[in-house]
Structures are given as C-alpha cells and as structure tokens.
Image (cartoon, rainbow, N blue to C red):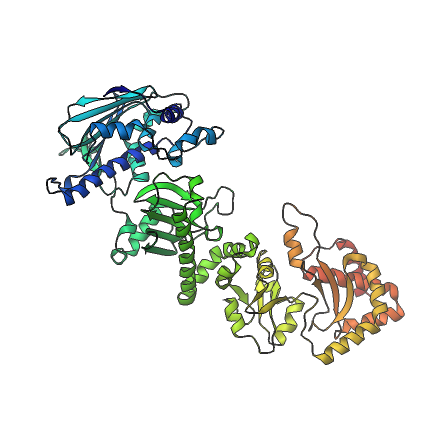
Amino acid sequence: MGNKQFKAESKRLLDLMINSIYTNKEIFLRELISNASDAIDKLHYRSLTDKKIKVNKEDLKIRIDIEKESRTLTITDNGCGMTEEELDKNLGTIARSGSFTFKEENEKKKDIDIIGQFGVGFYSSFMVSDLVTVESKSIDSEKAYQWTSKGIDGYSIEACEKEDVGTKITLHIKEDTDEETYSDFLDTYKIQQIIKTYSDYIRYPIQMEVEHRKKKEGTENDYETIKEIETINSMMPIWKKNKKKIKPEEYESFYMDKFHDYEKPLKVIHHHVEGQYNYDSLLYIPSHLPYDYYTKDYEKGLQLYSNGVLIMEKCAELVPDYFGFVKGLVDSEDLSLNISREMLQNDRSLRVISRNLENKMKTELENMLKNEREQYEQFFNIFGTQLKYGTYSDYGNNKEKLQDLLLFYSSTEKKLVTLKEYVGRMKETQKVIYYACGETIDKIDMMPQVEVLKDKGFEILYLTESVDEFVLQVLIRYDEKNFQNVSSDNLDIDTEEEKEELQKANEDNKEMFHTMKEVIHDNVAEIRFTHRLKNHPVCLTSEGAISVEMEKTLNQMPNNQGIKAQTILEINEKHEIAQKLKDLYQDDKEMLKKYTKVLYAQARLIEGLTIENPTEISNLMCEIMTK
C-alpha cells in the first residue's frame, strides 16, 4: 500500500499527543497489552469453532523486551494477527468515539488523560515514542506486513518477513527533555511496576527478561548476574476466584498490599453479580481511620477494572460520601476500557452498579449490627461520625437509609444503642425520645436537667459529638416519636397538678423575676421557677431551634456569625434557694441582684459556657459566703 496519510481528525489528535500535554503517559503500555490480550482472545475463540486452527492454550502469552542502547520497547503477542487490510483499517483511523470534537471541548483544559477520554488505544504509544513499527502476520494470511509511522506525517504498510502468527509492536522511545524523562520506559523495574499496576490480571502471561544477582556456587562473596524469563502478572485476580476457596489471610494480604495499609481490614465484602450488568466487587472496611480522612487531600473511590484491566485508580462515583471510608474495587465486563470521568456521569451501567454497591454495603453493615454487635460497635467507633454526617448532609436525603445504623449512648443501658432499641423499650406513656448534649458522658450524666428524668425512669440518649444534635433535628422523628432535648424549655414531664402549682408560683413572683432580669439584661429571654430540677438549684434551658450545644458548635466554625441560643434561666422552685430569693426581694433587692449574677454564672458554667466577668463573680461569691 505504500505511504498513506492519516484522516484529518486522527492527525489533529496525534498532534496533541505527540506534543505531550498529557501527564499520565505510562498508560500507553496498558493499552498495548490490552490490545495484545484481545488478539489472543480472538485466536483462542476461533480455535474453538474452527478445527483447522490448532492452539495450545499454554503457549499463549505476551512478551515485553527492552533494548536500552537502541531505545526500543517491544510488545509481542501470538494472537490472531492482522492482514494488510486490517492494519490499514485498524491503525489508519482513530475511532470516532468523540475524537472529532476533542479539540473544541478540551483545548482550554490541561493535564487531560487522553486515554481516559476517548478510544484511541494504540495511538497512545506516540506519547512516549517518535517511531512506531508494527509487524503482524494474520492467522488468515501466508504473508506478513509491517506498519510504520513517525506520527502526523502519515504511515506506510509494506510486506515483511515474519514466521509466526501474531503481532510485534516496536516503540522507539523519545529522547529525554527538561520536562519528561522518557528513559523511565526503558527501565525494567519501571515497566514491571506499570504492568503490575494496570495489567496484573490480564489472563495471559506477560513475560520479561529479568536480571538477578546470585552468589556463585562454591564462593562466599562472588556474585554473578543471571538473566531469566519471568511472568510479571498474577493473571488470576483474587475476586475472580471461588469465595469458598479463598482463605481469610489471602483477602487480608491482598488488601494490605494493594491498598498500602499496615493493619488487617475490619470487614471483607466479596460479591459477584449477574443480571442486567455483570460485575465482581471486593470491598474492605478498614480497621482504622486513614490519617488524612478529614482533610482535603483524602480521595474516596474504588478501583475500577474492565475485564481485569485497571481503568481508574479512584472512581469516586462508585461510593456515596457517607461510605467514603470503604476501599476496594469493581471489575465489570460491561464497562468500556476507555471510560472517562465525563462519561461516568452518563454511563447507565456504572450508575446501576453504584446503586447496587451502596445497597450491598448497607446490608452488610445491618447484618454486622444484628449478628456481630461487638464488631459493629468497633466499626461505629471508627466510622460512625461519617454515617452521621451522611444522615445530616445533602438536605437529609439519605436519613432513612442510615438512621438504623446510628448508635447513641444510653443512660439506662450504659452502652451504645440504636434508635429502634430505644423505642422498643419506651414507656407506654412516653411520647418523645429524650436526649441530652454535652462534651462527655460523665458531664452529661451530671447535668441538672438529666437528673429528674432519670429519677422518673426515662431513658436518655447522650450526645457527645457536635454533629449529633443536627442529625436528630434532620431526622425530626423516629417511628412516629419526636426527639426532645432535655434542656428545651418545652419539656413536659409534670402532672396537671404540678403544672398548675408551677404556673401559680411563677405568676406570684413575676415582679421578682422582672427585677432579677434587669441585672442580666438580654442575656436570657426569661427567668422563672421550674420543676425540671431535682437537687440542683439552677439551669439554663433553650427555646427555639438553636440549643446551647448547637450555639457552641456553630460558633467554633470558621464562618462564625456569633449565633446565640435563646436561653431561659430556670430556678428550682423546690430548692432552698427559691425561698432565699423571695426573702431578698422583700428585704434586700441589692443583694438579690448579686445572687442573680452568681446564679446566672453557675448556670452558664454547668452548660460549659464561659462567663464574661469571672473576677466580679468570684468577689460576689466571697461576699455572699462571708455574710
């Protein structure tokens, strides 16, 4: 056929590649090995249906050779080969899968992985080489042909001598530049590394000549260099094996090696699906939090394979954010080898697989919670916060999926419990789910508002994480039961008689409360007597959506807007302090004001809030104590 020109669009794309604006150049080897594997597949398949074609499956392989002096890298397969027409058709025109509009869509972008963008496969070799030679002999032809190209100038096809059926691709690797060290692709270790990363599970042996330094026989310190042909890839991925034949140590070893963890995983989830879309998944729940998990550097996502060939190291679309701690991989024969991040958004098969994986992970966690409670609590102590954020984020769209996976500390059980377990043992007369917020379990347990509810036999959920109360507000209710903060002003635990008695006491003393409020101004919305306290003299309650704990959390955020909870100073009507205040109102209003300041400071300290004037309060306390 002689010299020929590439089609216009192929020429434009080759020009972009040759000028090397793409960073992930090593992916060329993945493409060429995948092509070689496909060619062997075709030959093997034809041998099953055509008795004239004799193939020994044990002989099928891919060979990689490096010649540093001549700067060549060669990929050889003994697959079906190509005829002259097939060389022209397959290598003369780049597939149209979007390449025509490539320039217009991407000319403003940098660091684009072109192989991840379009089905250009073979042409990725021009990213690292300035001369490509393809020698091929087809199973259907007696003659062999050679395709040669230096890039955009075109290509030539001519007859050549080749004894064996198959294809041999020789790349002349570019010279190094200030920006790129192309000589890396002539380094045996580097090529081995690329093969292990992208093509480890190609089903045919990928072989290379490897040098080993061995001690000479009969000597103590003399060594010699031995060259041996080695198979670089493992061929059979662990996720393709029969689960019943895989030992736990194999799963653990694969995880620790593949995902660079120093500890065994907490849970292994190995799943095979056949149906609308076929895929294998191997998922791991780590036994500890990654050190960078809550930083912007952490990337969630699963490895994505197409028939054992790695096409994406971290596919974020496969896992929702609240399961972002899950590591692992998905391998599907229904995915294109050249799928890109842009294509992911519109790939129906990937969306279905992603949804199935989400359901599978949720089911596995539910089973762990039900059947392996100790292990689940260990998991929740590590990753529970992420589930809570998942419940709260995205406008609460996932709350129903996650609410039964949440655990909170119980005042009566003295351990972590689910919302379902709490509701299952509620009193018949109890209308709400009670909770209390604080920095630690011990601090919550000593809160004045908690004491009386415990005394009445109510179970309380103790919330110690900043996100907890936001989660309950997003949930709104569970099993038709609303959530009630024990520090809320509308806590309803009194009998009708107690309510009437309290209302009368507050009405009789409203002038006293008015005098007291003048001292602390707008720091509280109201001062009143309460029956919510047992032994404690005073507490702060909040009205409205913002509680005292939420105020502290919101004001710790970078965009602090000085949000304040609307608080009420409540005084135990049955405590001795109540009568003391009444006496002071009658006899010494100035001392009443001093008592008010001290009581308000006490209430703030109990809630873990700061006081603006600690010196004044200290002096007032000393004054009161000495009278």
